[in-house]
Length: 172
Ligand code: S3P
Image (cartoon, rainbow, N blue to C red; front, side, top):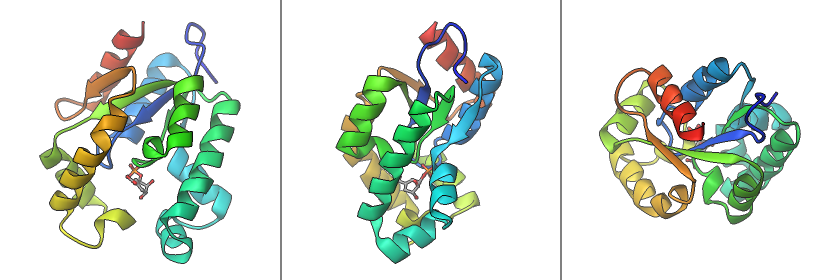
């Protein structure tokens, strides 16, 4: 649930590999609130993996489901929500998050994103090409949307707990 002095869910946005899930878990611990990962919630609702949803139904269908799941998670008043990297790019999902949550952009340099996503590559968007090229293009395309988040922190240096602490400082 949402922590006492913060009245809206904290919603983490940013590219794949930025550390949204780990930073989110650390932040929830610091706040003594709960944490939920929207990608996990989508998989649970669909009873399919993200890769299976993309290959069976396509990205557009995934975005619809993702928006509905995020809307439900915000209504359920979870304390900290990590979103999939493309969620905040969808117009309706972004408006939903901006109106009902505190959006935080976890920004990170490309080299680190490449490094982190290569450890466990389950991302359908990275499987058909050179991850560095794809991430560079996605960064350029998505930056105008991510920068609409009122709070931005970088995650390439230091442990994710430090990033979580910097989010707390920015919010307080
Ligand atoms: C996506 C990011 C993924 C997942 C899906 C699409 C994207 O989430 O939602 O593969 O469009 O950037 P993570 O950012 O948690 O990897």
